[in-house]
Image: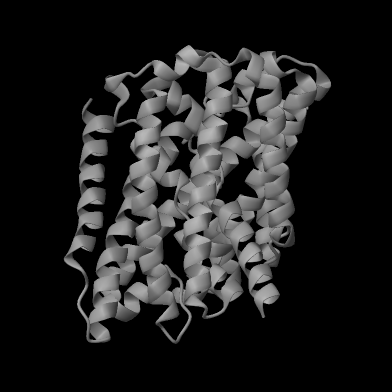
Length: 382
């Protein structure tokens, strides 16, 4: 039994970490170059606590509810149809924003990889419709079949990611300028909030993690806590390596700025893994969104696939291509709203069981509400 639980734990942990550590990682070094390393550490400390707490609340709701739902379904059960609609819109926008971000970065990595082989000058990112389209078609096909191609390879992929991080660090260390880590620009103090929140969110995958751990509450809690710890340390290590080497010249997706430092062979390795990582996460989130349409809204399989896959691609074709702004605003509005709803969902869940929620937990909602207000001011009125 002990060995079986350990295997369950590591399998669930690898899937959870593989889902949390996604495309957000590639935007963090650039944001650090604007706000400063100490500011990023501050946000990771605060938002890790907030994210872990909200995910643990959602996990308790899932374990304490007999029927299986996705997030909008749980909201509908406990808070009613009106809040189910609001939560669905929030989840849809959040997952759609994430899928669009994966299209942008996955397509960009594919373009850079192609350019490194054919030895041509790099095409401007805004005109990279062919690699993005190829990335989208491949992902849409897998999502339509309902098979997450890399689901059994999450642990090897994540181990490979750490191996590439070590290679990056080894090659970049001679170029790391520790003076970069001392600078802080308070004009960009609120800039990291949405992107860091985006990078620390994995609520959509919690129902699947519960299936892997069974109804073992302690095991699920350990997966969430250790998963966020690993994710946060991974993000900070990646920021340290990339930002430390490129400083103010850090590119928006991190990898392009390293081309002149790490050499073509290391960059190609990073690009290949980046494409695999983005594709794996694109398929996983696409399947989660398709399942929300199917299981919580009762749509047909084909119609669910159509909406889940094609809407992000249509946004790209419409010209929504600012990667940093996408992950920041998605983190602030969609994910922030989901977090706020989760707190009140938990309150109602406890009331149905005849207990009362600790008033301290209202602070999580208040924190997220303040974050939304500040980001509105920062992005739209600055």
